[in-house]
Image 1 (tube, rainbow, N blue to C red):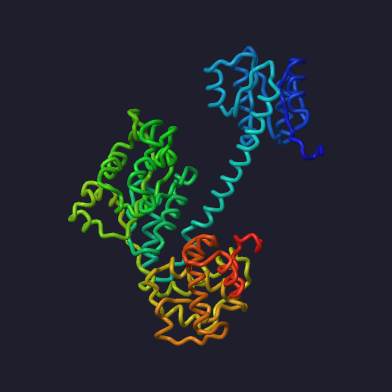
Image 2: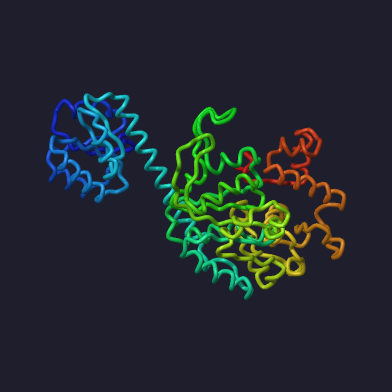
Length: 456
């Protein structure tokens, strides 16, 4: 259909080149030609085009002026230059001024189509990135974070101030206290917000691969290195890198990390080219790094470099006023993800939530509520849908939907599914049953998940 075709504008004076572009794009676009800068500029002002072509004139300066003006008028539209010769310095300068790519004449239809398709895909990707960044700015808004306890309000006030600097931050606290989330809040409220935010959990990567993951490697630097790899520090250039569980990094890699902090430079594994990066580091740990230093497992000089702005996050039990508001926020989030409408908690459920110590902190509360949303069959979360380890022994809770044995079996199935990211085949293997037997139990207990094909 005509309406689905791309809209293309071309500044082109030669008839044979007009024909070449028309022939190359005839099945995918409607193309408008302009032959003088004034009418071309008016066309750019009046309409939004998907792609723009500009012919390089003999006077390169006038072409660059037109390119710069067009890019300023429509900064998100890909601009492709055309010329009979591929001069490297000309191409480099054009790209610096905003051109997306360069195509030589006489035109190859395949080449023109390839460049246009790539330009459109890149524009879509940029739009998605901009959308996500705008969304993240809202998600990571300090003002939207639940902070009803004085101790946590003080933490947030410090983080707001720290976000305006480039100094290294060390977040400490128990597992599940929100270190990862708050690192994002710092980044997206800093002047680096429009640059990458890269997260690395140092415990999830084997020691043998961690150096390559962080700093990249050159082709042939070790067995299996069949191509060059760009590391996370290079990816984060201009932005922020979050090193979660930094206390788990091996000593030999700690030395390289220290150099990045001191000199902003490193070499890829197997390489000798020094790479400069501008990266802010936010580190986090639930370990006592001072004790790790005494044991010889953490470098003292690295500790002082990352401990510029230390922040200790309080456990959930030490911010009790936050528990119910947090539970409400997390319930709404789970309902949105699981596409279920639940209006809140029963009084008994609120009492349970408030009286439990939550040793796993916010992460445990979030997982508990996600499971409760899956289990609950009414429009409020009832106490029997709250599964808290060792808690029901102290506080008897009536069971209506299942007999005690069936309840334990359902909990076992849910736990296996959660631990295997809701992949039934893997959960069945963990439970030691066939996938068919597990599917029977899932249907019996009415367990559902939005990622399952049958629930979409």
